[in-house]
Image (cartoon, rainbow, N blue to C red; front, side, top):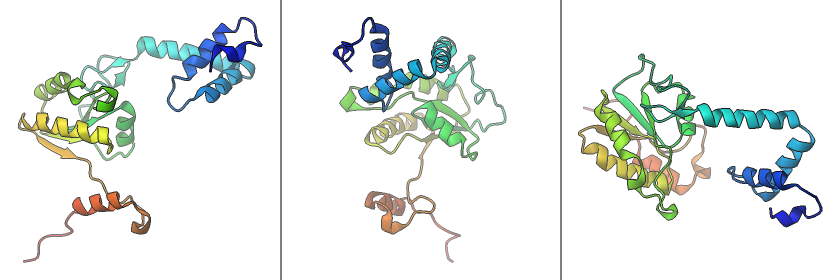
Length: 211
């Protein structure tokens, strides 16, 4: 939204600044940002104040865990502090949201490392730009035996996984990748060919080998 859109108003620079700030959120375009700004100021100023205070507090107090790089309030997050987890497993994800998605399954009991990004050559982020030294140090200083690469199945996520696989194997550690295939409840007729192909390649044996 340009400032000319507010020519009918006087002294609304703070409103324009608010809209510009809201536009920086993912999935929020000029019109959506304008609607959000008007809603907060017209209908819910209390919520606007709470939002502003919460953002300031989060920016000031949230830091990165010194072990897994995830967001946390202390030096070490609650997951890394949990001694009941399996120290031999380390799951590498792109973002804190990906970590939360895996935790929600309640099936993984190892530790994590959050890359806070992924390789994206088109955006100028090469694999070498990832903070490999920090992850390498995490692997050196731990009992990890297997690294699970849980980067997303996008071109960028795959490039990241290839880069990390090469580096981690040089450390004589086992490297695995999340399996891909037909989702539970999915029907082959309505599944895209690339997913079906990957399901065939990642097929698993049922039972033992016949004698």
